[in-house]
Image (cartoon, rainbow, N blue to C red; front, top):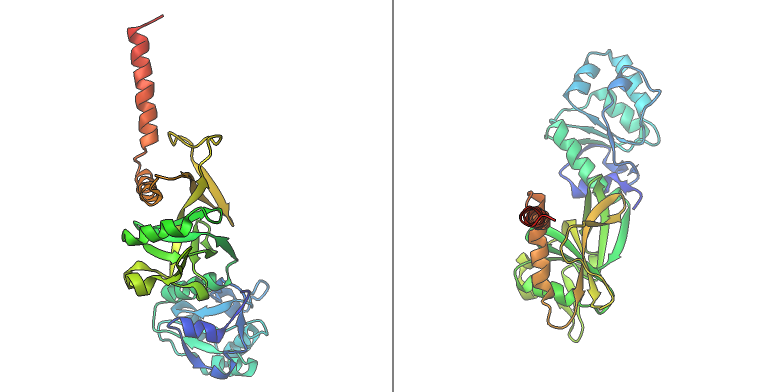
Amino acid sequence: MTEVTIQDLLDHTNIQIYAGAEFTSTRKIKETEISRPGLELTGYFDYYPAERVQLFGQTETSYARSMTSENRYHVLREMCTKQTPAFVFSRGIKPSPEMIKAAQEAEIPILTSDLTTTRVSNIITQYLEKVLSPRKSIHGVLVDVYGLGVLIKGDSGVGKSETALELIKNGHRLVADDRVDVYQQNEHTLVGEAPEILKNLMEIRGIGIIDVMNLFGASAVRTSMEITLIINLSNWSAEQNYERVGLKDHTEQIFDVEVPSITIPVKVGRNISNIIEVAAMDYRAKKLGFNAADRFEEQLTGLIQKNSQVNPK
């Protein structure tokens, strides 16, 4: 999605319409960033980001009130361009008659909220980043395992959905099966969710489509999840060198974010769901500073040094 209407913003947030309701379906937002028009109120328009939502807080409103009515109308009229999506007032501030007149003439809606300016900015930005950020569809299963978003990938038929089903039976939660829609929320965060048509559903070969919420309850599903760890399931091969100690960290890049990844070989007799649970716990331990591989290397180095002192050449 490359743009959303003001009506979309109103429908998905607690921001409310103050004036210009008839323009909410025609005015569109294409930028995720928000502008607080401080310099523009002084008459400086050389770098005016007209395509952004214009947010007025206590500071902007107080300065505007210090202007004469004529000057205030002139400046606000300059701010009303064909690209300007909307004006938003926080803290329950009522826009001036000049603002209402200028916006009405330019067919720009005015929105309002009782929340603080920072909170309003966060709400609008989070919504816009979610719907306007670049997206891609990834073949795999996304599961909430111990509060970590684990994206399970692998070739078709390797057992991704069956592994996820066992994780769900163990008390974990499904986010998306078969196809995961992924978008970048910020520089460090990827979020995955199910396409609308696949929400709460899983495909199990031999059974067909199952409704996870219906079978396991509402606690077995969630709508979206930050992707924290990627698990690649691979059919076991004697020729493949798999990680044995874990000294080397692997990552996969999705958009601009590097996500830690692990490859787990699959063969008869291996309980993959248990291994994924352990992988999630081990990842969390590493984030807290407890790295078993580093500890093993330190102990091995110490043992080598000790033996070299006991048996010098």
